[in-house]
Length: 246
Length: 246
Image (cartoon, rainbow over all chains, first blue to last red; front, side, top):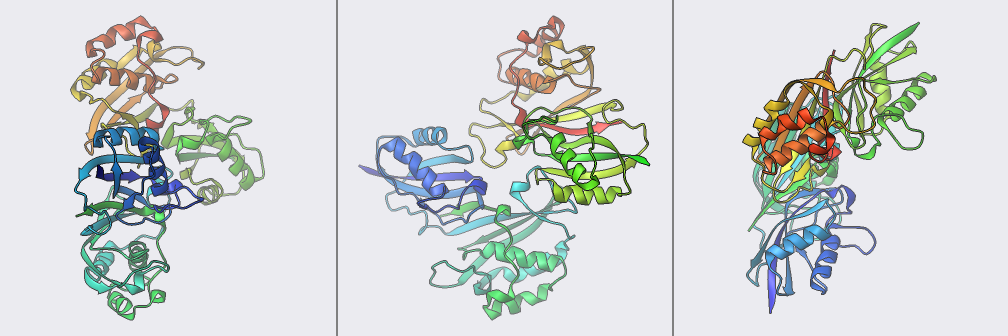
């Protein structure tokens, strides 16, 4: 009888060409599917809550797969973690109802973006934050963040090349938090994200914090629906998919 | 005129064969000396406060070098950081008196060892802590730590192959701190360390925390002056040289 399993996955995206299976380059999806294939001796298709781009990390990516198997969720956790490289860890496995779909059923996602705001970079943990040399004004950044919260057309913050029916998304919450002196954590929860949306918002926030643009410019940038008005895309290695809610 | 410069160095030891220069493999000392050579067009010998072994990290390694140069400390910081790979960062550079010697003048060193004590490993930050699956009893570990503090003969906790005139060292302070749920931080300050001494102590502490040996076994292990009585060496990637005091 075919069963449906839900995985919670942590990964360090540094060495991967993103989530989505590719024929040539290593990806998270492809690597986990290969391990599932070994365990079940069948060809498994893993459905992620969404793609993450090359270099992006996750602490709480969700995926599901259907399989006719007698293996238990606990066996999948143990077996997958022993087969997978140590930059992918299966944190949880649950058997779920047949209709559960990791992408279609997602109600919200939460991302965290880490900035290291210091005159000198760090060697330790450099894989996990964007080093921004110029001292950022976090009060200005918070004022800009307030303009992003709510339901908006985020076309100005969308990267090219992702299929979608609408560019309207609802940001339910967004905060900026200083931690350990030099670290800034931007946390954003939305009903969905366009491609590069978090990284494009972060790029704009850093321009606000650095004084290149004003927080009050944000409404006009949103209204213009023009990618050229927003700032450059922040690099992938500061970004973490933290949580997917259903 | 020859001047003397003191560097504070942070490095991620993952990709290096330790501090000490080697002809074949990349090392921290060799990499920084090569960068200094490019900047000064001379052959520079860098004196570290001590060696760190392959895979060990540092946030506050200290080294000094002598050079007949007109370059300023600020120029060394900028120039070295632009020449060095991003897993080595020069955090500070000071001109010091001619007699300053990073190794001979060190009064104490502080190391931190990170343990991730959780049933499942982490993908994020796995390079920076030792994953110990079995739940550790931190109260037992603290009781064991108390036996290490003070002046002792640490021969039972010494790795082979390091030249030294005595195996007596003074541990001035040692603490164990729980952080973020799963992380345990062991911090130890001493007037000097034998080779593998911190990692051998950590191996023994983990055996105490896991119930394999009792805290009260520690005095006898110390007294025996026999490496075979202490536990296995903890892996290098949890260890950080944090501070050197002069």
